[in-house]
Length: 529
Image (cartoon, rainbow, N blue to C red; front, side, top):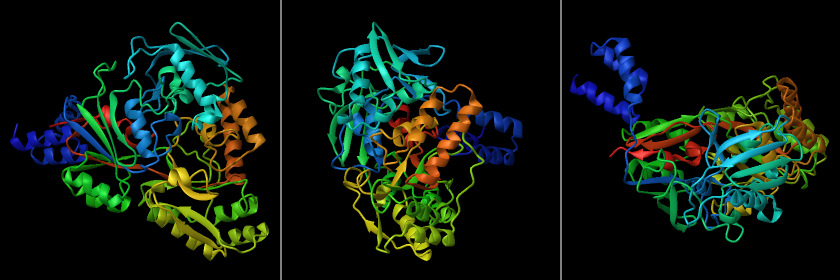
């Protein structure tokens, strides 16, 4: 075997050469296509985890106000920090299948009104002591308290009774829910000793890495957990998460080797970054979406005709082309796309219609004063450009939309879920019930559009217990129409995750359900050095 072919195989193992490129070059060297394909497959699957080193990630969405409290995690930096030191009962893998974590078995009764989770034995908290069923129950109960301000409030409110007996946690539901395990895998529900009641921001969990230092908005450092129960994770000696909110600075950091992984690669510089031999651009399509959100209970957005005018006044295809650079697809003003089971593909796509927008605006009776949309560069990649394009298309329809630029620092605590009209993003969820329970049921803490609709709530609860798939799909379709036509969500586009890694980073697998391998890139990856 020639040195050239050896070099190509090494590149396959590092993830810097595609199958097409490998087979093409190999056949040009006289290797048969069948043998070239077999060599690629063998090389691609021969990568073994390497131990040691310091693995660093440069991530956007960090603020000086960030907390280690799992209930409050709302943007990429605290999300990734949380997923590095903490664990949930179950998780969702890259295929959408349920994966056992702190629970080793899950079962339910026939009508899905009672669920049992058998807790894995011998798992230790970083601060000492083993995980018990009582810790799990205390954790879930803390998130049911509205004072916790938990992003999982809308999920756990459906649990009417929780109990611990030995290594078993039993959850009884107010109504049936066939998707409950997926909901319990929500990243806010990190199991903490005593539920984290005494000190929810202690950063004391069971993950592959232990928090060493935390400087919010700057850097969080971790060391490998020597007592971690899962040998397939946690390969580096230590890991670091650096807050790098500026796109240019984040790109420069990975090009120079300051960090090994970055999130949110600007689509405009994808080709430029690809030309850097040491960097690999990763892409995963999924349920993530970039949005503009209106509070349905706050003037002037409490007027359904004004909300419809703004929905009709945005050019979705223009945003997909110019902001996403084609790395995504058009949204339709509800938070569900084809990545979800039971998605209704027959719902008509909403288009830009200046005349219809103008008519709805006139019908709203708005007084003509400026309508202010608040946005920060870090709200989502290209958020400012997207807002300006929105303003231009709205102005063309006679709607006086203006943009107020906000700083990134403090945006997620001072603007999102506070201001009545702002830019935001959602990573999506594996199942529709989880997405709707997190942000659209009336009682959800993170109902960031203040959408409160009794019919929607009734349908959501009924769909949880409906085991006939066709009926359940019909319920979800009706819910989508309610959000699309009456809610405060403007969803112009579903984004691909476009991220970067250094070529020496091994173990990367594109994951649709959250940025940076669902927040677990530092735990799952290693350095081939």
